Structure formats: C-alpha cells, structure tokens
Amino acid sequence: MALAALVMVLTPGPNMIYLVSRSVAQGRAAGLVSLIGTGVGFVVYMTMTNLGLAVVFVVVPWLYIGLKAAGVLYLAWLAWKAFRPGGVGLFEARTLVHDSRRKLFRMGLVTNLLNPKAAVMYLALIPQFIDPTRGSTTAQGFTLGAIQISVSMIVNALIVLAAGSIAGFLAARPAWTKWQRRITGTLLGAVAILLAREVPQAARP
Image (cartoon, rainbow, N blue to C red):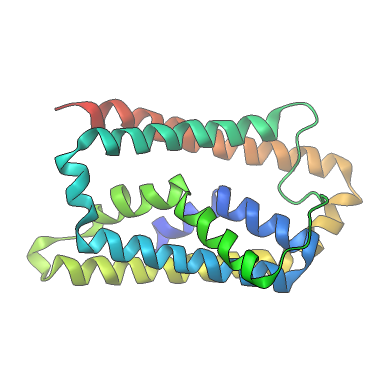
C-alpha cells in the first residue's frame, strides 16, 4: 500500500500542481497551509469510503463509471497543457494573487476533493488491499487510508519545501524546463491511458 501510494503521489496531478504553484508564487508557508487542506480532503475521502460510499457506486454503477471517465479526461487535459506549445511547466514561476491562509486551506481542500486521483485511490485502489479474512474491513480501510495519507503528506511536504529551489534552478536552464514539461506530460498521459483501459471494464455487467 505504501509503494502504491508513493507511485500515485509522485505522478503529477491537481494536488501537486496546486501545491507547487502556491509554493513558488507565495512561499513555502503558503504551500504548507495548502497541504494541510489537501490532507483534510484525504481524511474526508477515507471516512466517506469506509462508512459505505462504495456501496452507492455498486447500487448506481454509472456514477462510478462516470467518475473514472471524468478522471481520464481531466488527466489527459493536464497532459495536453504540459505538451502544447507555450505550455507552463510544473515548477515554472507564474503570477498569482496572494491568498489568505484561510483561502489557501480551503482551496487545498477543494482541490483534493475534486481530484480524480484521490477518488480513484479510495474507490478503486485501496479496496484491492483489503482482505475480509483478516478481520474488520472498516479497520483495514482506515489503516490503509492512514498509510496513504502519511506517504502523501510527507512526499508533498518535501516537494513544497523544495519547489522554490527547483523553480530557480529551472529558470536558469530553459532546456531543462522543456524536458520537465515533457516528462510531466508523459506521466500524466500514461496514467490517463491506464485509467482509460479500466473504464470499459467497469462498464461491463
């Protein structure tokens, strides 16, 4: 579970994009406040999933299929933004309005709640690690969720703390920035393709 969570968090997505952009534009403190918001978002997902949200997707399967399809389209759009001419790299400096800590927290929370990667993690990936023969599935769900949250928070905190230095390094090396965009776009596209392959399977009766 820890390895799966590490792979997911290292794949650029909405959370990472938001945290890095805030850290580069407004400083590490802003990035860390935003990170706390994303952490609360994970707790919300974990709680709702373990209290029976997954049952809703079994009863109304088209909601689950729609969620996966929306996630594929969103990740594909992010990949195109990285690849397109004039696209902005993950660590490139950009002009953003300075937000209050309350808004930073709120935006971090909302970004994660609308993050298709988080939804896929809790509704499709984590349940695969639950074994009904090993006791309470609810307890296992909360334990696995806690592992995922811990890995995500640690890795994202390191990214937030290093974002400013990485942005300065890339600013002095334009060629590296181009490759960073390509790598980011490739990773996002690969995840979109993998998820797209699962949509038809989910639609089967």
